[in-house]
Picture 1 (tube, rainbow, N blue to C red):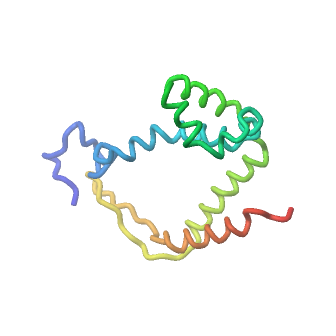
Picture 2 (spheres, one colour; picture 1 turned 120 degrees about the horizontal axis):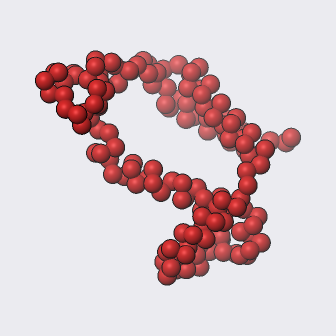
Length: 151
């Protein structure tokens, strides 16, 4: 139920809903760490990494982790520099865009029960189709089937 108008504070805002980022430190930490981790993954899986440091990516715990722990600042700077040096390609961009397009189509097309989200202070109750399980199954099957296409 929405709060009464007398209980609204400046911190709540007009569409405040309990359970946001201030109550979930893990989510906030993930938002901060995800860009760094994606750069690290981009570099670890690049041809440049394989050429510059042969075998390092296959032994990250015994080789890379101790080096990063001994000098975290230089490790972060090196990962950032190397991660941003991996240039996106047209096939990679096409793959990511098709990945997002298929997810959107499945979200809109697959059937499911209509659920209601929590009411905001203004009384808005968002409605969504709960098709998460069929979406995950269909998307996983499509990804597996298209992971190594013959073309």
